[in-house]
Image 1 (cartoon, rainbow, N blue to C red):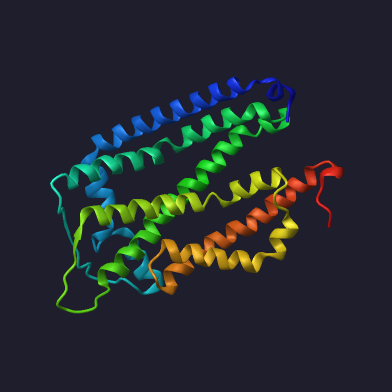
Image 2 (cartoon, rainbow, N blue to C red):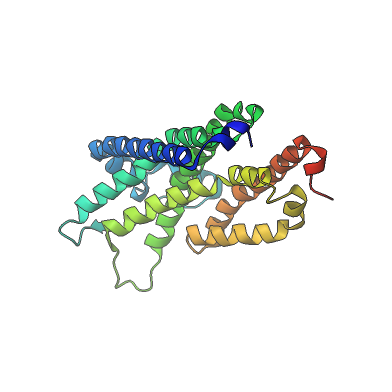
Length: 267
């Protein structure tokens, strides 16, 4: 920890934290306004796209895996509450506002923690912001183009009886889509989380390698939570997460090599 950070008082830290929160909130608000204003684009062409049998993901699933070929999606969206559509519009704007503002929030977060870093660590700021943003949006796109179509296909075509039709509340549908997208985006931040844990000495590459089998179990469990209960969906989520875990081991090993000898973990 550098001397400048040590000299900062508690009030200075609280002042910086307040600025971070205020600027992040404003970024989310502006992003939310953009989403709210683009209602037709956001709902008709993006969020409702996965319930269209012609959605681009279904074509690739059909081509490469032989599934979802000309599959009907038996669902009819309804609004059961007077304020239902307006409420969905507001909360969707907030959630997607967070997605749009994410790069700026990460930038502000870096500015907030940078006073506590050494000069050589501060130089990695642009790289940190880029990698964190890249991983998040990769997860968001993976959640939208892969996981969401799997969820929609499984849940809409699952039937306990031909006498039951799927008249789904719009709130239920939108909540599932936006939660899936954000959850996968956050989960894809695994290497960044591991990076900070390694920097703080909370985890080592040796620990991660020795407990790899437990990590795989945790990854499978997380995949089961954010996907429909079928093996194919869980595998599709688990594979990139396992790859990210292996990348995290490499990252941790690189951090350990750069540490002073007396701070390196004992083998």
